Image (tube, rainbow, N blue to C red):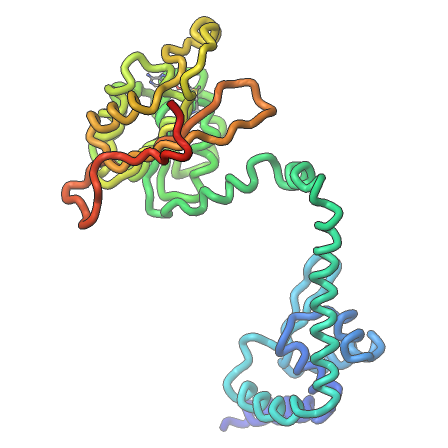
Length: 335
Ligand SMILES: C[S@@+](CC[C@H](N)C(=O)[O-])C[C@H]1O[C@@H](n2cnc3c(N)ncnc32)[C@H](O)[C@@H]1O
């Protein structure tokens, strides 16, 4: 052992020659705790705990991190091998003492009190929690987190991207987003929204002749766009061409409705889509494994009910066990 290493070991040994410091370290080996919690658990004045913590930190036994006004302490998670060996010998003898057993019980009570504070909050907050979550984190926080399930290697096509909200939300989760739209105003808005996203390309083009190379997408999205196109089957064939075999398609649009006025007001060509027609188009465009689910109806909104349809671009070789064709959940479909 080199001289500096020996003196470090001696310093560390000297630090552990104090029973209180050993009790503190034992508690911090099990949990990350703040000074107040350590004082409660070990029944010591906070000033005493702070003084011993300083000695432990100076000798390299503990680590700490600040979180707002609180500082959390723990046994240093990256102790060197010598210190680990030393601590495991000392811990074995400290652990068996009556004081350490009591400390452990009280530390457990301190941790349980943390949990009960959060339980008490939620016992009263259930009625207002949705509003609180929206106020604190925004309306889409839970759904935005689901986007992290996307494969980070994916190239995603947002076909009919509109103002680019989804392209911007997807950008941090995937390798590349290609956002296509034909409206100059929408394109300008999408470009402004995604200006800071270096992996988003906003392209001017139509869904009937996508400005995207063959077999280059892992996922194609058609969200609230199909009802605007004259020939949806043609668009699905284009999406299939741009997808790699095995790539995925997600369509979300309206279920059949009778809002004739939408044709004039918003240029809708289709008053929603029925399940059979959609399935037939997907098959004709060479997709397999279709799944169509109605989306839950939101009583606070005014528009028609929506569906989501997912499908897979037929792979060159079907994986064993793959059933071509489609699946409509009989419990959850619509006419
Ligand atoms: C209702 S917006 C939906 C935008 C976005 N997907 C969303 O969910 O917010 C429909 C978009 O599709 C675009 N669009 C409609 N038909 C198109 C076509 N044939 N080719 C390219 N873009 C089209 C429109 O310009 C518009 O931006």
